[in-house]
Image (cartoon, rainbow over all chains, first blue to last red; front, side, top):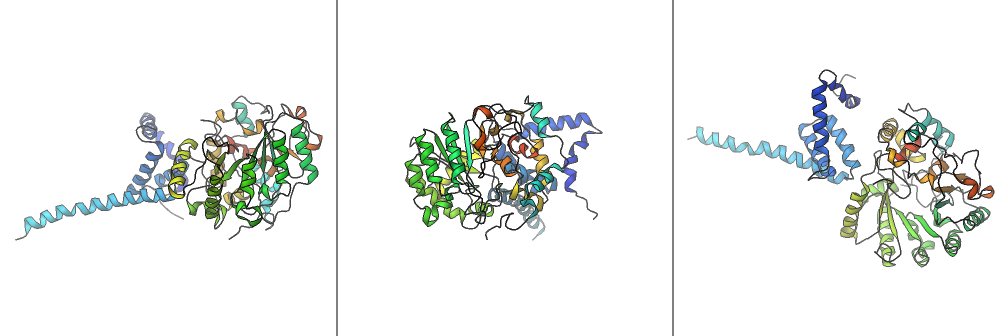
Length: 110
Length: 347
């Protein structure tokens, strides 16, 4: 079946380093540092990543961080709430732009 | 709904040779022997026996989805009095400090309490691998008192503090019964600091993924079980699911087998080899056969041919420094933080 996304392609992510190895190396070094324990725990970061993955709708990230969240000890209930956080921010972002709409209505209207 | 055992449903994976062949046929990046050698163990050998783990049989009042024993109410394999006696004479002739009684549900064995009494009379520490719901059966309602009287360390299975997750792995109603059982154990002093009555919880992931970080999870579980149910315990042990029996069936049926094995191998932790439980545990099967661990037992991988094969022809000395029998499933005990019957093996 023709499809743009293939789950097995996630395992090929490192191929992005083949044409630009130095950029890939820098990305990977920074990426790994981002997810290390810091002021936030690895588990908290994984939940954030899961939410963001849904906000940007990256199926590779959704798969990867679903597994990571489970392996860091998060429960499906916690992960579902994280997805709702992402949805709330995306929905809220659309809604709050409605204030701009209202401002423009006011400008044009008598 | 109760899950049928592989044996009762005549599933192909009920045959241990089929299980071993299934694992051997997988294209894996490396062998466990190669991985252990890279960690300085070539071959992997035992150290002094610290734990005599006695599997008294495969009969159980539950039939959990992840069970590597394929235990259930329909299993009939039960240790005979002769084998029980041989195990205890072996123990008494040794300086092995700990007896770990497992199954199935070991408390269902008619000689379970005699084993506890005799091991305690020999001055040994006794651990009971308890599924908690056994204490809710009418004939076993006094089990917590018995265990408390003999200061048996209770190691109880509870995959999650979520009812939905626990029941998904262990069967409908198991969570409620487990919480009731834990409250009873708490009333008897189990789980309280300094009481001398140790109650540990074992969590296996409810699916094809590795366990979370043990110390962090323990803190979460203590908070949530106390807050939600008023239940306390001493330690939380995270155990990796092994690709054996019913968990192997789940992996195969769900299309997760290859990915799970790849994950175990990719997560190989060389530091986990030193503390592998097979190095200091002797496993005895219901029929008296000897194994390096309960997982090898369920794959029918007996001790090395150069070592004694049954409890009847073994002495602690004859089992010393023996080569450990390994296979692809062993990656389950060396993935991530390592895994054992006592939880993570590395910090």
